[in-house]
Image (cartoon, rainbow, N blue to C red; front, side, top):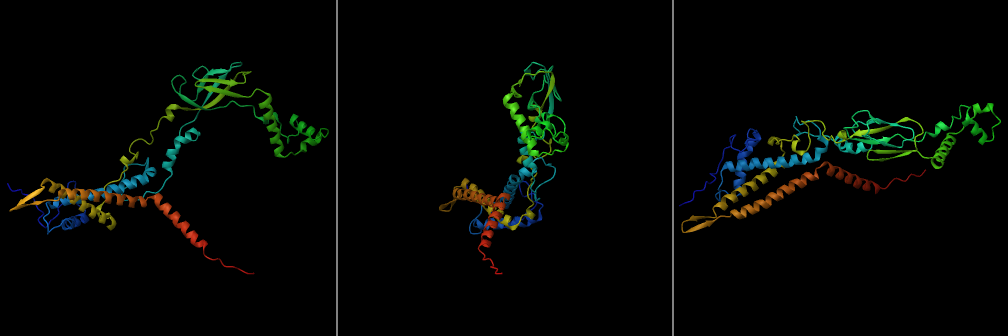
Length: 384
């Protein structure tokens, strides 16, 4: 039985609806180029010397797919280059064909979790207190009778203490202002300089600030070395304070609620969260420049070659009178696969060379090269 294979008739006429998805069917530039693309592909594949076992609709589909692939590569590149700048922005409007400026907002969002550990993050730092009892060193921070929280419950909420305010009394409270002219501090300074007998003149004694700092430092070292030092030891919910309290008082601390730190969701829904919902859409074919259209032509030809190879692979040979024709389907498929990979690699490398980082590096190299040239320009010698 004779095998009947549809052969390209030699001409085509595009109408909207001839492509599988119709993304560009009503683009006037696409309509004008569709039949030109059919002629370009069929001639490149050997027509009219060789019959082409395809119809115009097959080539229209390859043309549409080539535009889709080009647009996808562009969108993936833009999404990668701009993701940090658009995280958290609304998905309500398309970013296709728009220039997106640089912003530190994405960097701030990333740094926010690190900032929390330095008490500068975007969560609330609360204040709590512990009722200190004379003679008691150890306290249970899960005891609601002892611990009071600004917000949250000791019994049900997990909180993380950031700072406990338990320090030595400041040295300045043990050292009077030398400008006052009365009191133990002033008298001690006068005695130090041998002026203890000049009592009325103390009101006009002016000391340099470094003398005050040295004196306060001496007081602090004295307390640290010769006295029981203020401090605490916190293990889980068990707090031990030093020295042993000699009176009842309230000790304060700051804390985060664990639930606040663990709440990683920001800005709600309808915003860019990752590359899957960045609002990049199909490119308008009429807006693609000649550089892109040339790549699309090459890729359309490769897709058509692959499709023709698959068709011819189904019919490895065709009978003719007194002989048969062996078709080159497998060769076309393998050749098309290699060319597809080469075109995709070429496009990706081109896009990578145009990234913001690559442009900045190129401008830096250009600036350094120009500076080296300027350094070799002889300078004028002025003789006075």
